[in-house]
Length: 221
Ligand code: CA
Image (cartoon, helix red, strand yellow):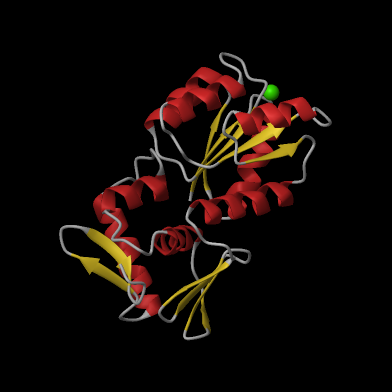
């Protein structure tokens, strides 16, 4: 899952990055409103965490411009404590949830996971397709009820396929959500991860539709 965290307080930004990465997210940090607007308008994120007081362009304006352009990724707004007007304005501008500062990282992670699930129309942390089961709270993978050790990258790949299990996911889209804009964004890197996962999970879990992409077997894609 690819997350953009927009926060100009460097310490909070660093804490967010550390906590979100530990929770298995791919995290990009941005400290300027105008840059954030551009990224959100041109890149594809599974979630944006947005501070409101930002240099360049304030968070509310950034959010309003995204929504006016039809950008519909889930947005978690960070507000000042007690500033109920900010919360109302944030929600009016198109925020999906808000969190007053100071916040605990555990709460950011829980809300991030819930927002991403909800945006994909799923209500619970346990997701399954066929014999494959993912637990978003523990970042754990099991097959036929047997736990399978997975790296953060492997988990991210499986959870993206799980979240979009009603369709075939093109490799380019999968790469973007696995690596962001990193140089590692190569098709053969993706094929290597898929091959490794197939060895771990056994046959009949990750399907390929030639020329289109990947899907989870038993999920109706
Ligand atoms: Ca700020």
